[in-house]
Image (cartoon, rainbow, N blue to C red; front, side, top):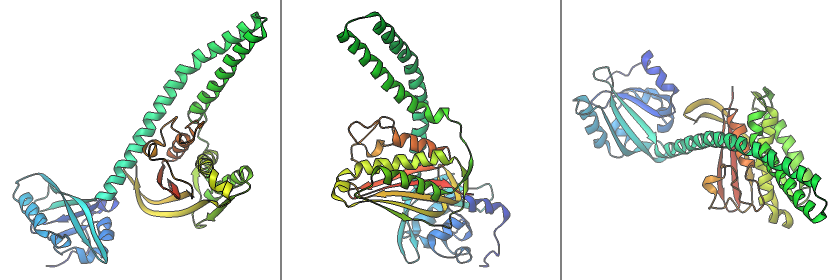
Length: 356
């Protein structure tokens, strides 16, 4: 069988997808393989096209049966889980979708790596959660703000009318607590009030600023390690927002490192890398910034690991539970995302931001 020298133009958009896609005939011969499938199989497109796609699976007969069923119009689409063989790698678990096309004799086979699918589902939940949090915070803060001002004003008026020192102390408690709640509300509303000031951002200047602030607060017992990829280009963003986001993460890490700081062996790592062909938020990006903030602390408690970006959730007694919520909000305003992987002895917060 002659292999196609170049893919038809109508196949080329498949190369923009993060999922693995092949267009095949009903006999299993490959007409087109996108770049994601090429990467996953570890072989060239020229080699894949013209070959038998079922041979790429540990159980080829299942796909062959599915293709024959699609070719004879037994179904419009079929889904099942399988294992994809890879060159010099262990087989990859994938979710297979076999679907007919409008062109006779052509069938699309889409492969979703199960790990990638789980990651995408997790990222989508984070984005949906952040959006819901934003609406909840905004509405709740406005509902609290008006009666809070009335409570404080009434306490001030009452204080002016009474002469007893004991009673004055009570009104001062009311005023003090009202002010504390007002500060909390202001922090909740801060990301939504402040305009997004866009300029050229050097991520290493951001990291150095955060590093200087952290070392000023924790001058002993903490080692800050810098692992920078200096080839990372500048990008358009809000420098102050990104400083605050990274600072919130780093400050949380240092508070979790309290015992190690006291022992003198605490470590915080700022690591920057370029990620290529990454997908998050249902969109694929050619390049993205990866900024890791890694500490050697005790890890995020299991009880809150799935909720750390929720507002008012804190693993530390007395914590406001707003630091990570605000950090996620600021990064998402840059079309990015923060992820966290944590075990005892290593917690890694990864900030992903698309690059031009």
